[in-house]
Length: 429
Image (cartoon, rainbow, N blue to C red; front, side, top):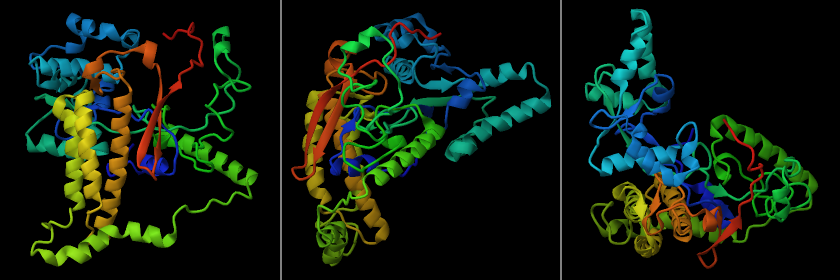
């Protein structure tokens, strides 16, 4: 549902074009089978498996775990505990020394086998392996390599590194024009909001669905911010809607002729800079990967990962950060951007990797800037601002948006008002 090679180019290129971004502080940290990234959904839903701590306790249902979730009401009172709050409890178990965390495959498969024939059991075991072979074959490799039979031995779970995405369980992305067919507000309480005629708050619609704040620039799926949980099929549907809106825009604006703001020669100079860095300096050393005049894309990517992981709420700090840590990150990202101009490309593949890194850096910087700006911890289990470690609805129940100025290489981060479009009196069972 999301390509492993994605480098945040959707966000970076839109930002450089001047498009407004939204919720770039939001990230997804899924719980997965450790070391292989195997999916957990089928195990929880199909096999009715439970997550347990090292002492065999189903930790999510413990009274102390429920007390841990209480400050996050009403978010913690959903029929299924939200992903970030499940992570929140898991991380607490690990930090308090009750790890590792396991998927109790033994009990789940054993319970199902109580009412099954040997043939059905064999089919069930095949389903267990196929769950990984369908999506993450590496996890089947881990099982085989570590002599794990899921009906005999439990497997470790672990939260992953953070991901930026605008679908599945993530909401970051680009601020786009909303639909025009939502209908009228459903309660008098909404009349106080600043509305455009019909339904939407001011600033939520400017005529073409899925168009960014840049005229004629559209996006869909992971590109659309503040619109998560649409998965693959929903992203596909959103792509069709965006395409129809694009066609309407073209038909309505036949005289619109966008032009490059940079000359072709200047663009060529910039695009092929990593190639020149290599050709002009490769003979300075006998080992082409070790050279004081350039850095390989792979090494630069490692540096970016280390900065973000250690200072911007990565795995290394159990997803914890604060303003002081991000000051360090900002300084280090500044130096990294200087060194990025010295990236080399010894072939077309490395030229691709170099430009992926430019996009990664910009997406990572947007993420850090938004976390800096939002002084609360709205997504416990995904990340924590330890200096503002609470959900602050009074000040921060809003969208955090930003605009990047590529000429000054600076960010402007600001709030956009959140308005409930569904009556608060409506309740869901």
